[in-house]
Length: 110
Length: 85
Image 1 (cartoon, rainbow over the protein chains, first blue to last red):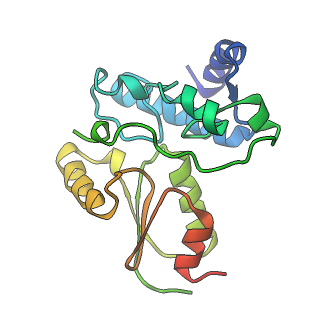
Image 2: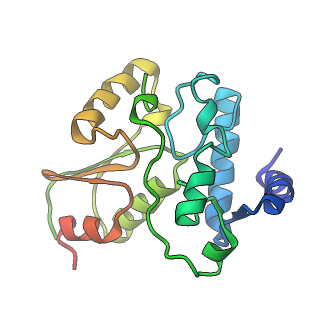
Image 3: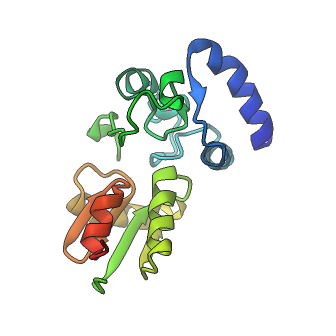
């Protein structure tokens, strides 16, 4: 699968749930390339903005879309990576703030 | 511009790390960059210990400018620490 195919496949599933790709397509495609890179490296699409433990079970919470996306989009209008955003965020109705890391610190290294 | 050593702890796939590299490059800053996700496990562990001392949150990017540490892509903070106004 290439990034174009991944884009379309994810868009179809995620948009009806209210999660949109960032309107900055260049950024989205960089992140999708990162997801494909991680899929090749680890066998799962680990979040490109977090360090994988190379253990699917350990990293289950950060397999994209991560479990933190829902609270992050609800609170900030964007996920940690700025890959998925709300419609309002894309329309500039929500300030673009740096989304803090929500993953518990003890999960970040092992 | 501040000429102190600049070191970036990065992930090769991370958008915020890329933003940070783009900013440093645009500002003509020479810096060392470690792509932690590309390292073999033993080296990765060593660097993670180093990062934890600088940034107990252990998130990326972690940028060291002289004796200052900037966690995340904080454009204004980075420019200020670099002495760029």
